[in-house]
Amino acid sequence: MSDIGRQSLGDKAGAALKPDSQKTTTEQAGDGIKGTMDSVASTLQPQGEKSTSQKAGDTLSGNSNENSGSLLDKAKNAVGLGDNQPRA
Image (cartoon, rainbow, N blue to C red; front, side, top):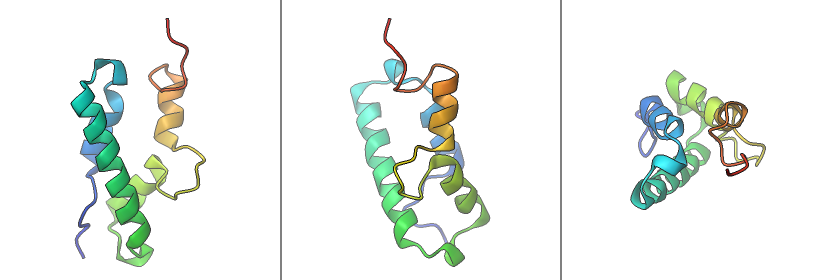
């Protein structure tokens, strides 16, 4: 089964690697909408019907819907690209 409504790993990585401070308001809003849609699709799609890449992407992006933060967010925060960094 195809992963309808899901973001590709490349799209997720591209959005995550560009700092929010370098994104336009439209890009930030689009990232938020796409992320929400991907999270909903992740929740609704049974685990057994997900592709291997989407299972891996869910693990990296924290799409388990547990408010614990994703591995990707933790990595961004560690290198100073995350939202939890003090502003200069």
